[in-house]
Amino acid sequence: MCQLDEYLQHLRRASEDYRAKTGCEREQELQASVSKVTQHYKDYYTIKWALAHEDVLAFFCPIWISPLENVYSWVTRWKPSAVFKLGNSIRTNGVPSLSLVELTQEHMRKIETLRVKRRLEEEKVEREMEKQDVVVDRKMAELVRLVVRVKNGEEVRQVERLVQVALKGVMAGLEKVMKAVDCVRLKTLKGVLDVLSPLQCVVFLAGIGILRILLRQWGKKKSLNI
Image (cartoon, rainbow, N blue to C red; front, side, top):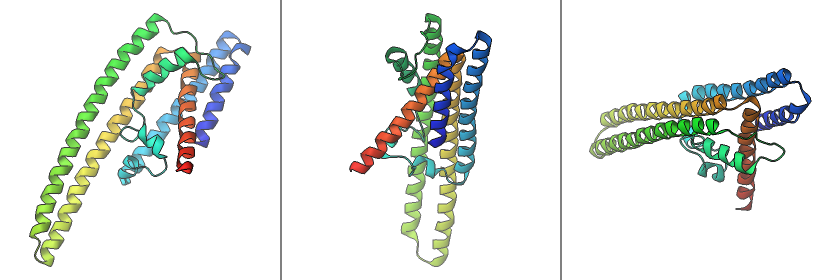
């Protein structure tokens, strides 16, 4: 979270310095700030996928986030459609210390088209998760029947091997779903940023950072009060 706070401060400074720069100079600086933060997201998911290959369950049951953060989590992270709700909130209510340039009707049309596409992808992921649940239930039922019939050491070893095979298949399925969701998240973020101007991108990314930091702080306070 320290790195996120660092990026947030960087975005805030870029926004505050906007009026002090010349047209071309300030656009380049804002774009550099946006590129730096988006690269952070790409690096995060690259590392996440590498770690998930070793232990994907750690991301489905993370011990490093608070119960409050877990409530807002969807398949190991934020729900893509939440980006559109946040963007609308920033547009209508504003973000402390930042001012979002007014979105045009063309901006809104493109973002709405993107929102509909991402919602369809979310529904596809949810169907895949349902399929995974069915697969897990079926494999567990098969293993239970085998365990009930175990009579000697040889059969115990056979069941243990079958358990390992079944779990490996389940983990591979979860890893596949997680990567698919993360790709939707990255596409959603890129899609919104492609619509916005550099200044709007800075404000938008700052809004995401503020939300994540506040959610983490509220979650910690809640946990301490329990």
